[in-house]
Length: 494
Image (cartoon, rainbow, N blue to C red):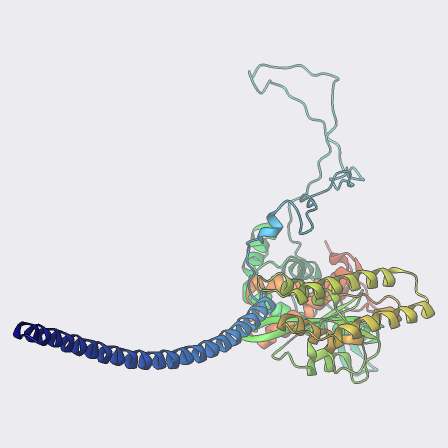
């Protein structure tokens, strides 16, 4: 081997050693990178595991929050209207079609309906002739003619109070050994206002729901009678005691009725929460305002041994009363519809909603038929089987489970109307009778004292009972206000 070849081999060896060294350094760098990537991979796995756990916990929290939101929404819907109601109509109510695509009825009277215009007066109290002496346009004189037309006008004379001075004789009864006096007709003992004024004030306040300030203004400007708001309120407190017997008679009628309705709504007494209760039949209504919504109120009103059937909503305070119950289908259908109309409604609640509506339609048809005991018992068994199937059905969605729970709690109370005649399926009658209290609450905000609340309940009971009977307010109120007939005479002196 020559020297040149040796030098060349040494150079090649050096290059090989350098390449080997570079390759070893590359391998070391790769190994280090692999180790770091493995560490990063382990860290990423740990981080993914932590993220997954956090995701699961967030899902559970979201589920709980959704349930709380749904419960709060239901609670909000339940309390809606206790104090205030929105004036905004729902968008679906503004649309020209309903949910099935059918055209909605226009507001007001439908085509072909019977008119309700003002008819001509049945009697003519006076006749007058009207003619011109001068033209109203050019002011020139005009002559009389035989061409006429008839115009009938119904008006009121100017209201003017009549002040009567009674000279009441004192008498000594030998039997009773005491002084006795006659009570002037059309008056209330110890009051300088007659029953006509009393009846007017009661009608304005408890029928027309006029505030006391406006009643004072009306009496002063229209009738010429000066009264203060406090004076009117004292009159109401006195009448509350005066009407104690008629109020107790209403209570007795409700207890003796075979079918009675009950409902309650919020009230305010001295700025504190209270409850107004309504117990009604087809001919009488009894109101009472209490500080509680407890079951003791209906127990006390309906008596120790209540009879008949009580129609009510699904409030639990009525359930333990020892009598037959009919739960309101309108409340159940409304809750089903609200649950089914939510954006996140499940398919189960949609199906259950349709099933409940179909069940009510068939039940309403069955109740509207003439009552036959055997047929009704067969229908009761069939409807009960369908309700039991809903109760025992396994639902996975929470919204359907809530409706199922409501049906389970009511169950047989939903079908009482099938087995007894003249029992409605809804509590609409009580809802209508408690509405005057709701309107009054929106106007006045409630009562300023417990005494005022008791007075309002008694007087409203009498006014609404007169309304249910279809009697004339003025005549009936005057009869209630007038003192009992006495053995005596009244003579007019000039």
